[in-house]
Amino acid sequence: MTQKFDVVVIGAGPGGYVAAIKAAQLGLKTACIEKYQDKDGKVSLGGTCLNVGCIPSKALLDSSYKYHEAHEGFKVHGIEAKGVTIDVPAMIGRKAQIVKNLTGGIAGLFKSNGVTMIEGHGKVLANKQVEVTGLDGKTQVLDAENVIIASGSKPVEIPPAPVDQDVIVDSTGALEFLSVPKKLGVIGAGVIGLELGSVWARLGAEVTVIEALDKFLPAADEQIAKEALKVLTKQGLKIRLGARVTGSDVKKKQVTVTFTDANGEQKEVFDKLIVAVGRRPVTTDLLAADSGVNLDERGFIFVDDQCRTSVPGVYAIGDVVRGAMLAHKASEEGIMVAERIAGHKAQMNYDLIPSVIYTHPEIAWVGKTEQQLKGEGVEVNVGTFPFAASGRAMAANDTTGLVKVIADAKTDRVLGVHVIGPSAAELVQQGAIGMEFGTSAEDLGMMVFSHPTLSEALHEAALAVNGHAIHIANRKKR
Image (cartoon, rainbow, N blue to C red; front, top):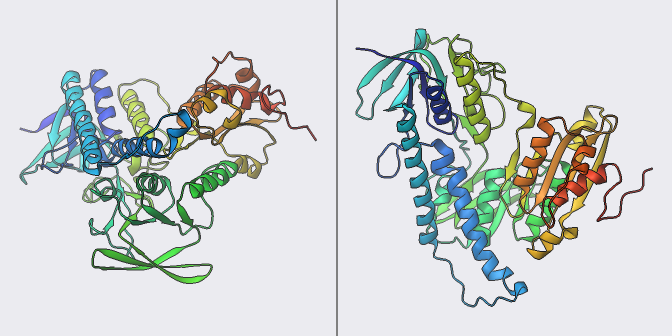
């Protein structure tokens, strides 16, 4: 007998599992299909983010920074830490345990919310039916009033550097090194490349990042990107811009990478090479020919602002649709869709999705960049405040970077908050909360911020927008 559900979700990543839980909480009979298997061959929930993305990479970033700080940063505090070493397999083991705890947690949440978990590969058929091919190859068909496609994304592969998950790895393989490579190459100076490069550089690898674009972090505010390039270079990352990889040759557990830049053809030999040139949507065998669901020219599922596909009752969210490939964007799309299916009014604000790069210092932003606003002809006032002038940052010996607040020159409404520095992600989230409620720079400046905190840097940057900063000299108005 065909099983019937109010909602069938394909994919249990941060978009899919959140959508499934929310739908069940709203009283809808919900099933969630997942096929991802861990190294033991067991289906694991949480998608790329939890299994081989956001969470494990942050575990390694934190472990590697603690090692770096013990090695390089304790002395200034009067702490002697001699003979500090890193046990890489133990670090990787800790990461694996965190992933295991969290994936098991999702299974528990499914149970407590009454979500039916189905193991296998989901495929959308006509008339809102979903075919599930189990791990044993057997198929079943589910009837759904509504379908939510949350199939996620996977790393882009490039012909000049085919991944073997040994010498040439993708972002997944880069989380599994059991020793520190002496020389590490990274293709791609995006979020993933910089984060993974930072992990292994802190542990002693000589890291070269090869980026085809001439511009560093083009999505970030230019002032912040310029500061980031300076800081990361000082930390030892060799970042080669305008460098296009043309080939790779693996011999004796090393890889020779050929690339062209402004100086012509170059060759470099690495012990490991990480390919981190972006991600693409997973749509393989996802849609039957008569499903009616359309893809756009880049292979993403076409949706409107409420994540509706071309078929009524079929939705798509997360990395498989337009917009930033971010876990928090996928989750909030999942909430919005579940709410709309339940008949509630819901709309996500796509203008205020924070972006974060978890290097140290962190790089984060929300809203528009100064160059975007100037390109749109919007007159702006800008306030900045350096962490070098923050008492809390000085106490922590973490004074690199700045906070930047951009406001409309006519209305004083805050249009962008950009941070490079300690706890940048948390400070940007404070800006996002204010911006969601239409804050002005003056509003932020009039709020009481506790002292001493890193948050005061946001306060001072907001004051600086209108020349009212207290703890730095204000720029004279022209």
